[in-house]
Image 1 (cartoon, rainbow, N blue to C red):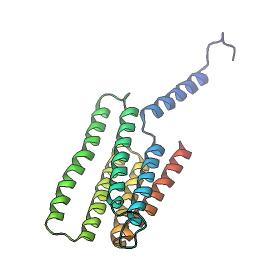
Image 2 (image 1 turned 180 degrees about the vertical axis):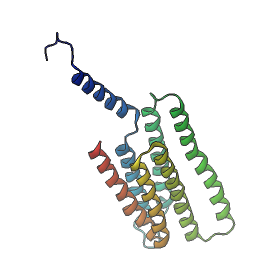
Image 3 (image 1 turned 45 degrees about the vertical axis):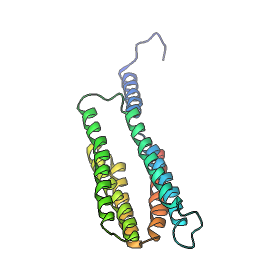
Image 4 (image 1 turned 90 degrees about the vertical axis):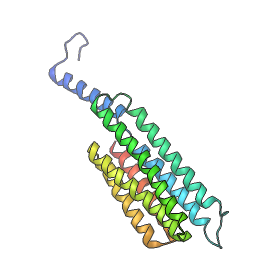
Length: 202
């Protein structure tokens, strides 16, 4: 088109559509990044927990609880930071809803920590305590992901919640230390597949 000519309706609509997509990507958290972060945390963290459990462990026992805890906290912090950064351009009711949703994660896990700690101190068997912590944490995360998917009308986030809850159930059925292997391979692998799929779709 000649630069001196006025753009036609089709060109204007194309430009508006391109700008809309650009802004939408800037203010929407990239699910490929988020799922990739959680895939790494689950695969490495619970893989180390599996290799560091029992008398025939291949890694020092102290790595079992510490590595998953550090990686999951780091994944949560990175996810929250990514969401805050990408949502910086959102204002009004949507921003309030996202702030309330983000706060529900912190509140939920603080209360869950208190409940589980009290239950363990009342004489729970070590293997049962391991299953309690992993299953309850993942179930809470799954429910919050379902809520986020419904709030944002995001089928990927909703599907992530379904997979998280299914992994928690499978881990409890497998028992200790099989639960760590289920969480590492099924959980981490599932998030890796979601990351690859969302990257391709995006």
